[in-house]
Image 1 (cartoon, rainbow, N blue to C red):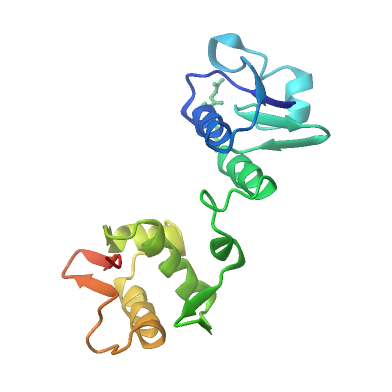
Image 2: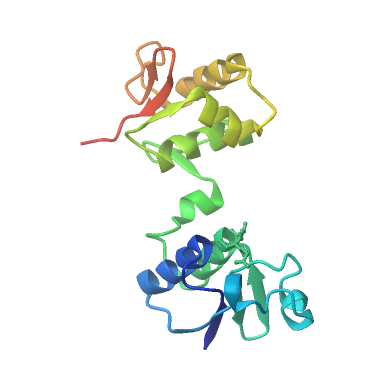
Length: 175
Ligand SMILES: N[C@@H](CCC(=O)N[C@@H](CS)C(=O)NCC(=O)O)C(=O)O
């Protein structure tokens, strides 16, 4: 059975517990971290050299980092509702035809899709796509223009990727 190391009051452990509940994976949870200790013991550090929780043991496979664990479990159990295959394979289709997006174009669209219907600020997009050091909104404008050329029926009158003036962009969710 899947073993989850980590105290239940840790938000990163809770992400993994939630994933298991959603998919219906049976697991044993072992308290570790915080007042439970264990995480600085050699046996634990051998599993997870960061000495943090959660850590998951799936037979001989040992995984740490909560997001990686969630992707692993969703992938292993084919939970496409939690982790859609198109997001994994980075495929975008417009009217059945595959749209060829550059990695940065894809990463921006991925953010918009993950937060569809909500306004994403320039700051959020720059941080998620370029990393914390980059702050040039001009980069973003160029890539959004390119994305619209590839995705919008009329890129001059976007219906999909909407500009929220001085704030950011919003992906329209079809009704
Ligand atoms: N990036 C890691 C962060 C893990 C992390 O920071 N875990 C915290 C609990 S939320 C931890 O282990 N704190 C020390 C402890 O509980 O002993 C992940 O997502 O798994």
